[in-house]
Image (cartoon, rainbow, N blue to C red; front, side, top):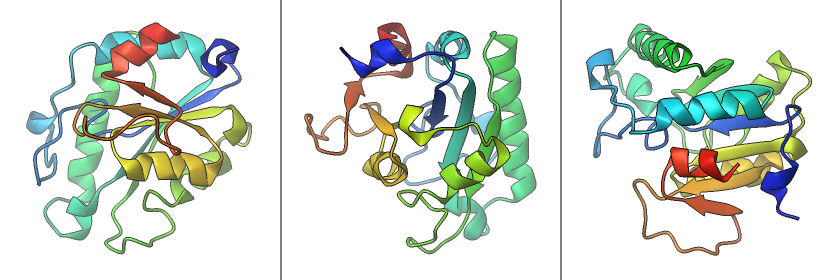
Length: 182
């Protein structure tokens, strides 16, 4: 049986942001609301996920804050806009965690799983063995493995990543393709 067939409302979905929900800026950061451009199908995917998962959590590395290119207030405005777009489309985002630390080995910076533990502290019913992490980078896949979650790789920005891969359980071309597979 495919693990995707066993998902029920006790499962948690973790999502990266840039390159998963919205277009990335090449070698730059989404610094304000006007730069946040959702991929086609994301709102529909999030509506589907809201019927499948108990919690939907975004975990995003945001070095742009650490580099002084944007503020936490800028990030909060971006996330408020993102949440509004998703909620207006019938979806949900239960929480958003970010890591602005500059050090690659920060416990909260993916691939380390500190943001997963933050989410579990807020929502004690999260079971990592019944969680899926969706991302577009190998650091997201490492986050999934380090936390004991299943991993879904989206080939939106790095289609060259080979599959099968030991850190990737599933691979899709877009978020809506993954949602439709459920």
